Length: 69
Image 1 (cartoon, rainbow, N blue to C red):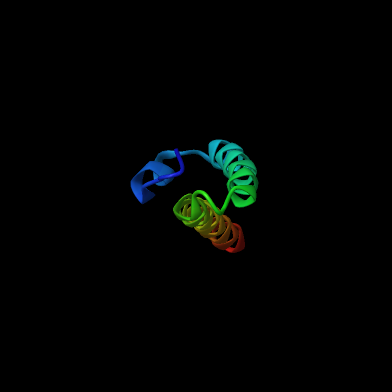
Image 2: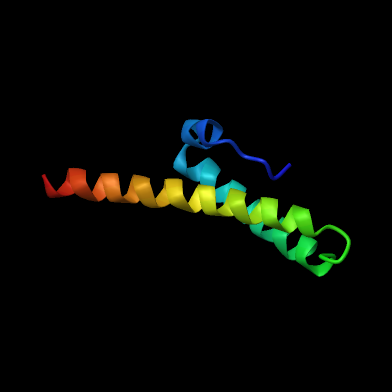
């Protein structure tokens, strides 16, 4: 579930990204508890969270630039 491609994230709106981020954070906490069994899953979830945060930051920066002009 945690695998998110950049093109899929780009298609999401801001609200959907925030919801997905919340879901992934909860999934990460659950996976972290059982990290001995599935260490690879936590790494995959971290990457998905980072990808969502990166797109959110890029959108925020773009909106700030539009407001300044």
